[in-house]
Amino acid sequence: MSNSIESAYSLAKERYAELGVDTDAVLDRLRSIPISLHCWQGDDVTGFEPAGIALGDGLAVTGKYPGKARTPDELRADLEKAYSLIPGKHRLNLHALYGEFGGEKVDRNQIELKHFQGWIDWAKAQGLGLDFNASFFSHPKSADGFTLANADEAIREFWIEHGIRCRQIGAAMGEELGSPCVMNVWAPDGYKDTPADRKAPRERFVAALDRIFAEKLDRAHILDALECKLFGIGSECYVVGSHEVCMGYAVSRQTLLCLDAGHFHPMEVISDKISSVLQYVPELLLHVSRGVRWDSDHVVTLSDELQAIACELVRGEFLDRTHIGLDYFDASINRVAAWVIGTRNMIKALMIALLEPGVKLKSIEAAGDLTGRLAMMEDLKVMPFGAVWEYYCRQNDVPAGQCWLSQVRQYEQEVQSKR
Image 1: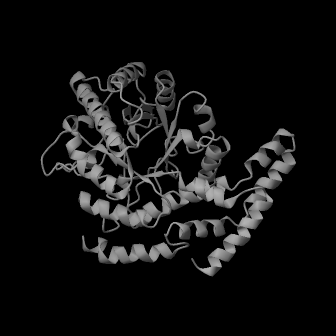
Image 2: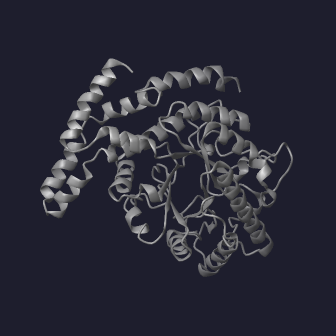
């Protein structure tokens, strides 16, 4: 470790100690928080189904940056490069359309554990946990905009079977890897224009969810989550699985609720929802994204909202009840860099939150000293957290500062540019 980084950290450690914060303890805690990287950033949500169905159902990836992964091995290689540049030990979040089908047409209601064994073996070798998502989009049986809430019973049954199989696969992943798999359900069902009947699709949706979640599976292996959304492309006026529907379901069935940072009104933030939701559900899944004017899934930056999310998790002591995953897809920049930038920012935000003198801040607030609270919060913004971050990177044998970018550019030249 360079002398300059050591010296800067030593000075920062003293500054934080004056506030009662032990930076060494903070970094130990930070090391224990996994972030689940999303496989779909690496190939623009294409997946590996032989049919090669175009992305649709409210999802859109913009940009044509060269070098995207085309095979499971290429995607895994890109992920390994990204993990090597991110401090800490993390997870991978898979979608069902990323199975390895060997060129065989396997429809969504026919997927089996064997189609994901390659991912399990790779995750085991890498020391990673796996999370999983049912894929209720980009399929001929979702072309009319409805899956689990479809009025056609045969189509609805098809998607219910898909969800059931995904849960079984997720549970097997969790058991084999010795770490619970968070299995998430999100369905794009909805109407572009104002519906005449809002009730019936939601009744079908809830009944379908009950079928999917009916089998009691070991929570040591799988954690069920349900994801809500305000609107999507082609479902601007009505989404069946709204926040109210999904939160009501999660509370009544005691599943996890998934909050996606891009799934709400542009002026609505999920940081304010964390302490509310966790009054009623056992655990929370976060899909951390960055919406710009709409659910546009931009690469996560160290924004005020990202910092607010991290602070809520730390101040509320919610880290042990929250599973943090990323969810964005940017094809306008190098895809490995997109993973690295977003994940490092999520970790930075958590580190800054952990560096807060939380007990002191709460005691000032409890005493009614709102002036002192504001003054301290503002002064914390210029504390030397950058020195702590660079020390943490070096501790974990990953590049500090922007040194990681040269490695991505070398990888792009040697590997990605030849695809």
